[in-house]
Length: 305
Image (cartoon, rainbow, N blue to C red):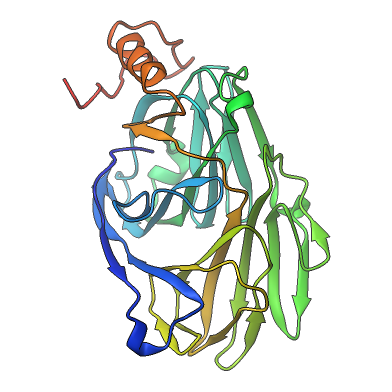
């Protein structure tokens, strides 16, 4: 998904005792393709957390029968998209010919590399009933050596994602290694992505990686003397032993990993070189990207004209 917009950033106030926290980001809501998203990355103040350059919280959005999401075909370069649903279903199509329904607990990883086009819609069975969509979509920036890889598509059913329990906290290790588990989901640099469910009063020590952040999908946390409200993204300093505590029952996503250096972003295009993005824009405007089999009649124009 796309439609990049500027977001509101609230710096952490020193006088509330948040020495472990670098910044707390309050995402701005954005209407996109028939539903609402909260965009936490990138912002003016914080472009990336480790290799993660884009973070959207989709919904929850309730649709009556006959309505639903219709994200028309659009292009990407220089990233891998990572889609994860709490509720609902998305029908993924791409220019490689992939056709895959994404359901709760699955992980969809689409490697854009030197260029791919995809759409996100729904099956008639889903659209013809009342339904809900709720989940997260993130983008991974690629290391410079991998930015021009051939595009690829990987789907991981929910049953393949490892789970763990740490002091009663339920965890899913979705990408990378943490809490004694390693995910099978493909990575391109050191990458961390964990989902956790905490009951009120439970605590969890965050993994130690170069950069890390916690997004509160529901509930609220306390950390280092500060409250992290629902739908906030807290970016932590790289100090060991940081502990978060659930102020109420909470569902969180922990992200982070290796710093990759500066990346430029324009619409759906990410690269370490501005000239590469300019070329991608011209290629899309000129119709030089491959089309999506089974969904080739529509497309999203480049918003810059």
